[in-house]
Length: 117
Image (cartoon, rainbow, N blue to C red; front, side):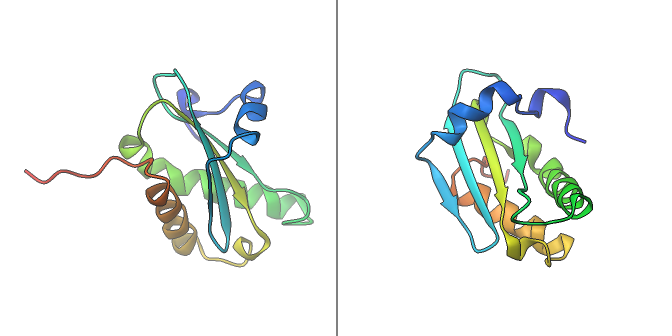
């Protein structure tokens, strides 16, 4: 489960939906806006068109949340982010879901670069 400060509340969904900042991948879409919050907040959407059974939708949301958790320290602050799953993501393994999420966040420039000392 995501820590509470990183969860996107339902009241903020409409603003992110209207955003023109979108990253498309074959298995995932990512929308984001800049906000005044101290941390970045994330939301996950898996529609019934993506996975017909609620069991599959919930599993996919759980996997997406788990894929994002290790990236939270690298995430830039002041953003609201929505991740939309596509049908092809249902058949992916967890490691490929992790790779897709990391790539999408990197493309959107929402990850801080690791600095080597």
